[in-house]
Image (tube, rainbow, N blue to C red; front, top):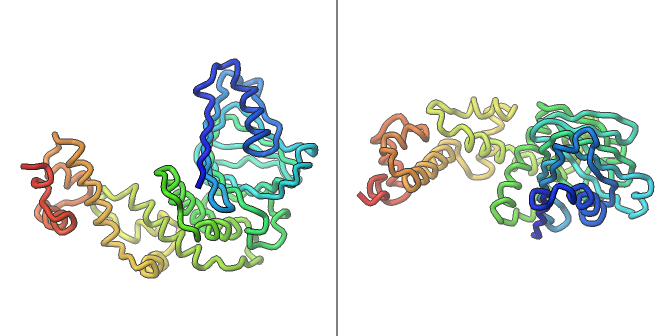
Length: 310
């Protein structure tokens, strides 16, 4: 895995626009790029991506920028696809005969072999770049430029799986080899029309459901009454399908929730010595101190007080 990080934050303001144009054209993708004149004062780029085997996953913050692949740019022969996942705010595209604004929570596929114009007033976006041959969907070019609205089950699963892969990348860990195939299958499932089946997505959906459950547990573990029904509702799936996904991964919801809470408790005990043991227990979702102590010792081989050294 190779990681690339680019940012205008380290450059003098006068040099940022030309630097962005050069980097977008030479290192990221053959494209014409620059600053939106009406938003020049807010112009900023913070770009990070990781190249896996055939797939690139990235995350970027663009403000006051435009990027376009003109007919002249297409001479590079690039026929990859990139799926964009706005994480905050929105972005505008004109691509493949469609003019779309994609809001946070939505997504859209871009075909590099076709002209595209995009405007980034202020957007934080995830991206997944895939070779054409990796997309298990018929005629992916015809699906480019069609926005997917937030809330569809397939898109929720893709976003959850992307977040799980990106957390690994950000921590310097190389994602499993199968993750590239799973990302491609989930992108295909998100963009394909309901009457157009995609190939081989069953395992990808299982992995994505597990990732979605993990992601919600990681965000909401401190809620004392958190249960699978609430987690499944957040994923947009049934509790039964979430249980089945965890079972396929040889996980249990109760064990996952308890491990998340206890790991966070250990962090608080080590990092915030002014918090009492009871305060720590309550902060991570336990309501019974004796139960917290027993579970903590079972996991780490010592009580919370022993971990603190007294």
